[in-house]
Image (cartoon, rainbow, N blue to C red):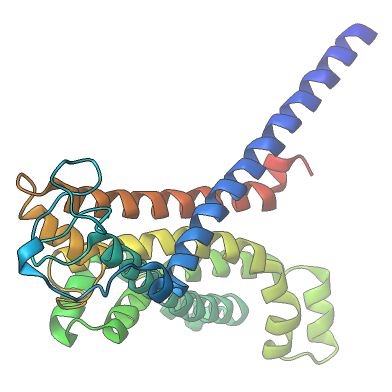
Length: 296
């Protein structure tokens, strides 16, 4: 009996160590990739060897370091207009991350406020907000984004507004569910009995409780926003050319895939690496805050 209990305890401890290592690995690797991308975006003028929009038609479609035809100073080669690909990828990280993070913050703000109001008020307010959220979720978000960008025009502000509006329902549903469970807790009922208004309850009791979940959802949504911005730019509905965005570079490389495959390949690898890193970070944070997965 004692031996079985000892074996079970050892297995449980080993499982906890593996879970802890996996969580730290995901947070560390994902955070490192995101940090590198953010640093490249911030210090793009210092890291990029050339201006991303400078053209040199004498050097158009030159391969990079892997080829004997490589041109000195152009590590990843050049595009159809002789622009340095590495410089455009570095500057592209700035625009892609800016649009992704800003649209995430906008959708998180709208969705969190809507979810808290629906959870606190209940009744017809809850029905109006949540049924509207359900109706918008039934409509494909990428199609909604395409329609809105086509109507408003493709610039950074419009992209942020469109992407932010297209994903607020995710936060609203999460925050609504958490708020409904929290309003039944004794500390919230006590705050209401002592005269605490809705704003006080939201600021003091609701938002601190839902913040960890919001952090996880927001982290995962950054990757979704970057993918949507890339898709819109690839379709020609994002930031207009010659803006250096990963979607624009991917779109240009797609038309010359057999002549200059390095353009689309490196743009695609940049998108994959950043999205993978952000998802790794989000999954690690989810495991960190989930008591069922941490054993707390």
